Every structure is written in C-alpha cells, then in structure tokens.
Image (cartoon, rainbow, N blue to C red; front, top):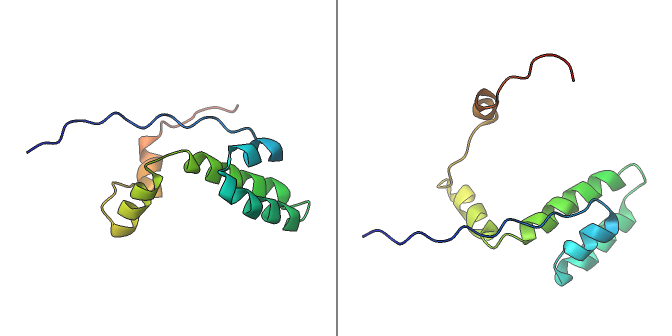
Length: 96
C-alpha cells in the first residue's frame, strides 16, 4: 500500500549573517549557548562561529532535520560522496 504524498516542508527562511540576525533566528533555548560560543571566540574565530551558528539556525527551522539525521546515521538516507558531487556539478571554465 502506498502512502499519499506529503507536502514538502516549507523552505527555511534566510538568516542574515550578523550576530543579531543569527541570534534572533535561533530557538529561544539555543540562544544562551550561542551567546557563550560567541563570547568565548577570539576575534579571528568569530566569523567561523557565526557561520556555524547560522547553519544551526537554518537547520532548526527544518522540521524534518532530526529525521534526516536519524536516517543518515542508520545509513538509509540517500547520500553522495564528494567525488559524486563533483561529477554532478558542471565544470566551470575560464576565470571569474
């Protein structure tokens, strides 16, 4: 028996790159950890910390993320190796 198709989850909202934007996009319960990570980061690490937490904020908007992670850990989520991704991407020619 086939299950009826489900609507895809809504596309995640874009999250700005500033600390304020990232913090506002995070669920309330994650904000103290974000504040701590940002406070502990050296000036050279701040951009990296913001990028990581921006990804976390985007992921937190996806209601299917936990299920996807579970399937990845179980080996049942379709995935691609880096080599496969490179073969699927069109080659860029010339210089930008």
